[in-house]
Amino acid sequence: MGLLDRGIEIKTPDQIDGMRRAGLVVGQTLELLRDSVRAGISTGELDAIAEDNIRSSGATPSFLGYHGFPGSICASVNDEVVHGIPGDRVLADGDVISIDCGAIVAGWHGDAAITVAVGAVPPEVTELMRVTEEAMWRGIAAAHLGGRVTDISHAVERHVRGAGRYGILEDYTGHGIGSEMHQPPNVPNFGRPGKGPKLVEGLALAVEPMVTLGTKETTLLEDDWTVVTDDGSWAAHVEHTFTLTPQGTWVLTALDGGEAALSALGVPFGGR
Ligand code: MG
Ligand code: MG
Image 1: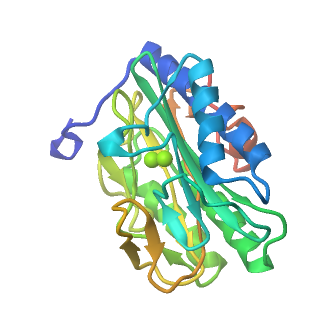
Image 2: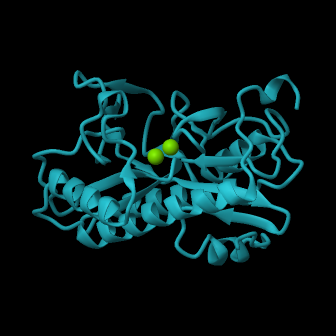
């Protein structure tokens, strides 16, 4: 382990299995929320659905109380990029919502996010969602044992830049995850490959591109949580937690472990 690796938590296979249990709760909760999103539902109602599902699965919502955060999900609508507080806001046809969710099982964390259209959205928003999701998978697919953290960053940026004129947030990043939700190292969504800590077995990372139709510059609202774009452009945010095993890549928050998306990109599946 070099200096770059300071503070990085390396999990045993048993501990990774614990993270898979947390990841499945997160993945199942997000699928439930995807099916629940509709015009007329409030973000607070989505939050209640999430908390119920997490607790009835024997898990604990990791966001609730995190630095005082009042919800079990982050619900970020339209020009809100991340960290929106769920509440009275009612979704309308044509909105786009990013839902971020975390759960803890026996001390191990999972963290993932989806972006969902409410009814019909403009084609450029559909495209933004597609590009952001693809970029996340490209980033995960770029990770392999012996590689470096910014191999992921580079693959995310390259895919987004190749798809059009989008903003990529630089002030917020993916992260290490394990016995805490946010751990070293940071996983930026831009940069040159081949830098940062080495990718080793037992490392778990959350990859989460935050992409806008306009600027990368954002402002924190007075609620001290909600991050909005400076130009009002709409944003998408998706996230998965993954790890590397000797067999390949295992996406701990994907219901199928990421097998379908990874095999489409020619990446060996490393799940158990
Ligand atoms: Mg998250
Ligand atoms: Mg995260």
